[in-house]
Image (tube, each protein chain N blue to C red):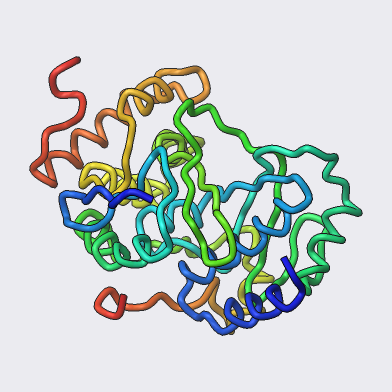
Length: 73
Length: 209
């Protein structure tokens, strides 16, 4: 795998024509979250969906696992 | 993949309590065992968006579609494959490793750009092209009626794309948005220009419109 191209924000770009390594994907998580936070609320999980019943049963009344805070990524 | 390796993978995925890596690991394992039977799956919807943006959007279910298959994916075969990972339920939705997995129909993909590949810990994960997701989310944000959660997703996708965090073919975004599959070019262009302004970067369409 080639050395990854970097984004404007300095993390490995998810490439179009070659696989991205697991490590490179992990490295970019926090920065990708921060980028999104500039344009929309931090958490944008849908409040409801057709899967609500099964999700809320499995996840203690929530629709999925809690998200890590940006600073913990 | 040996049963020991599957067992170790399931243990790792079950213990993972961070939604995005959990889904990526699960997609990696499931893709690997379907691949052994000649079936390629692709991640669609919220999980695909999450992998590109870390947008805190995904819920507790992972949606995948069939990208290609060298064999008929019968109900029986799906159930046999999912039995390998100790799943319960079916025949299109299973509970596995503390999440829900849906294997939906054949992948609907109008994009000419490649399905992206993330090298997961148990095997490669194929992800819907970002160009398709951009056109799709903008459409869903407007039709059949305004839907703010889809607009937030579209904004986060565009932010990642404009920052170069996801390599994006802007010509393909425009082609898709102008195609009959989406027919929403004005909406897409408007949101891209708005996001480019927010990031103080040049819109990819500045010079050619």
